Amino acid sequence: MLLLKNSLLLLSILIIVVSLWPTRCLIVELPVGKIRRRWSLLFFFICLFAFGYVAYTLTSWEKYQNSIDLIAPLVFLSGAVFVFLVCTLSLHTTHEIKRIYDLEHESTTDPLMGICNRRYMEKRLENEFHRAKRYRHPFAIIMIDIDHFKKINDTHGHQIGDMVLKRFADLVTETVRDSDVVCRYGGEELLIILPHTKGDAALIAAENLRMKVEKTDFVVDCYGGDTQTALRVTASFGVTGLCSEIDTVHRLLGQADKALYFAKKQGRNKVVSCANLDDAEKC
Image (cartoon, rainbow, N blue to C red):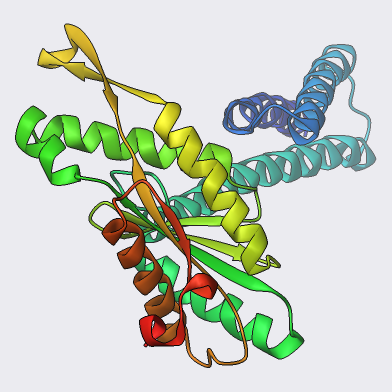
């Protein structure tokens, strides 16, 4: 029985020490913050438990009187198994959540521009549109088209064109509010969804973005990164806000597209609001 007691204690020490590995891996996986600090504190306590197990084992190694002396080793073993299961399960759960997040992110994000893709845009736009209609909240969208983008591809190549698209998307994302949703509508066209925003406020936001794009040097790598070149890019903007006449998402997009068409027709690098078009032009 003395051998059994000592074996239980050694097994408990082994399990509690092994528990440090998944705990350490979990800490590395977590971002810096409160949760990571708490898991670091738990790692410290597990180390204390391990030292306590070792100390108890050394002091009671040759001591055994009756079966009651097996209670403490069994409790130690149960505690070690519990800590091991909690730590490994937490690590596996973290990996699974991260995997699900990565899959969801890939399914909703444009791989080139790093913004929301067309599939997510359609779903989010539908939800925001009906929410605004139901609760009578202001709602607006901005449609953007990079001016003469085909010329950039023809002059500098498609790799440079892709870099410009990525820089442009980053610029738009950095400029808009956190509550706004930037999506790739198609090709070099972007769509910004602006919840709780009136048409005139969206018009101001579009104009600010247009001026920022106009003043920005789009620095891109050339010849495999050996040299860099700065390109000047402009964009045209079509703005529309939700009103009683617009009863479908399709019509909302159509009005923004019509405003964008007139922005390009007026010489590009312009912002046009659907509200400023006459009835004949809106049709």
